[in-house]
Structure formats: structure tokens, C-alpha cells
Image 1 (cartoon, one colour):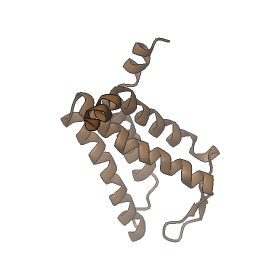
Image 2 (cartoon, helix red, strand yellow):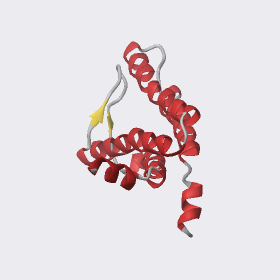
Image 3 (cartoon, rainbow, N blue to C red):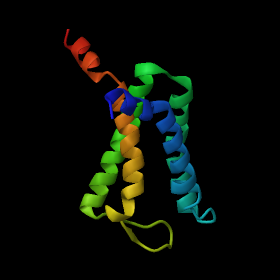
Length: 134
């Protein structure tokens, strides 16, 4: 597959929308016990990421959009990797403790990773870095 085809598939706007919706609906809304205050507090705060992603998707364009995509999705992907590598556990409210594993987090790793990659491929970071060197 030629690089142009890969870049077409990895369109930052599309990946921002996909990731924002999956993050909001599957990752937060469906997972949250809305009767549990700590879950509502954390879930509500985490929904802000989707709001930011949708803003970037609909109100920015070009390299700015791509660079913001990379800076939003890249650290999220890195945090999933770190949390899984460390085997971190988490618990909200009185629910069961959950351990972060790579096997359990393949879908979010793929989605956040492809979103970050879309930003990197379209962000023209080399030009940004060479302009700062001048």
C-alpha cells in the first residue's frame, strides 16, 4: 500500500471523530455507574477529552489539526502502554478492582494509536522543528 493510501485512510479528522465517540460512549458512558458519585466525577471529567477531540475535528484544519491530534492521542496511547506495562490496578466506588493488561486493552491501544499516528503522518513535524531551529 502506497504512503498516500495510508495517509488517506489515516485522516486525522475521521480518527478524531471515531476515537472521540468510542471514548465517550464505550469507554465512559456505558461503563459508568451514574448513581456512584466518584464514577460520575471521573467519567464527567474524562468526557472532556471527547469534547476537545470533537472541537479539533470540526474547528481546525490541516497541519494544526494533525498536530493537535498527535498531542491529544499520543499521550493517551503512551499512558495506556505505561499503565499496562506496570500492571496498574484501578477501582471506582465499590466496584471490583481491575488490572490494566495489554490483552484487555488491545482495542483502546489500537484506536488511540491509529489516531496518534494519523496526526504524526499529517503534522509535518519536520518542518515545524526546522523552523524553530532558525
